[in-house]
Amino acid sequence: MLISVKALWQDGRLLHDMALDVRAGRIDAIRPLGDDTADIEVALASPLLCDLQVNGSGGVMVNGTPTPDALRTIAAAQQRCGTGAILPTVITDTAEVMEAAGEAALAVFGEDGIVGLHIEGPHIAPARRGTHKEDYIRPLDARSVALVERLRAAGMPVMITLAPELAPPDLFARLVDCGAVVSAGHTMATAQETRDALARGLSCFTHLFNAMPPMTSRAPGVLGAALNSGAHAGIIVDGIHVSWDMLRIALRARPRPGLTFAVSDAMATVGGPDHFEIYGQRIAVHDGMLVNAEGALAGAHIDLRQSLANLVTEVGLPLAEALPMVCDIPRRLMGLRPARLDEGSAIADALLLDEAFARIELA
Image (cartoon, rainbow, N blue to C red; front, side, top):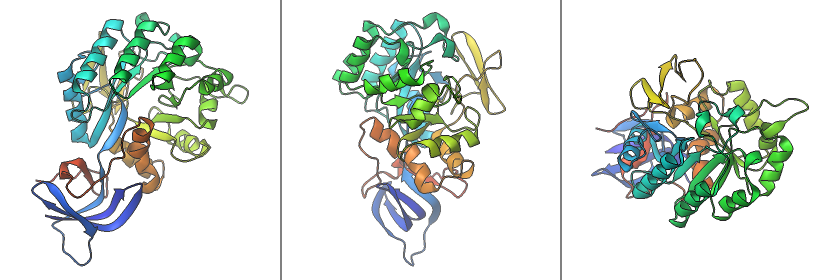
């Protein structure tokens, strides 16, 4: 089978008018198309995408079922959406649930695109808890730090989201020292508190704008410090959590390219039913939004393929700027090897999209 590719993402650049020779489900050759007639034409081919914040998918939530099989189900649903590397994300819960999620992640680490674990909470600011259950919020403690250290000792990439202004400095330092990506989120930190945390090893910000105080002219807060910093930042690109205008402003405000990446914040409805339960609450999709019984936002109903489409068609980024945000930048942050398509790669490891960013499935 010969696939013509209008644009091929490879090693951080777009190659145009390329061809993929596919034999027995694998890429036999990657070359210029020339005058050959293709069997299939695609607008874009890239490696599968990388998502560092996946709370659930395929009808399953990490918190609800913190088991190896549940993580496999989530990863499989994401793979069908075009995302081949994920950090399953456990949000604020009991210590037992957090530890169970850690053990499950260890059991399947390296399988099915499960490349680490994101621990989001419970060490967050109650005033910015969002949908996280207040009963489970607690200060950063030695038990959580020991869990992260255990995962890191096994070689697993770990991101932990916390409110840096509330974290004891000695425990914060242990997280940094073991190589975890410490990310500020669900926080009331001032700009100075954020800068102090950055100096102590804070290296990321979780879903920029969301669960953070708004930035004002006299109080830039965590958001202003984040935008001005050289740290990485995730952002939800659904047009609901952050407006397109604010996305454009945020991207222009960063000191250099390659710092901001897209996350889905996906819940069980991605690749699954239109509702699920967490903390005993029913969360359902309404007009593309995930909301709880009070009508408040409760996670996102989007995947990274659609996020890529939104970055190009709604935010107005060139494809060469949008693609790193869903592929290269998150991998680099977590210390993962760059993803690339090579001769010998399975064609299933390629994301093939048409002009409308719809996924093309090969028979």
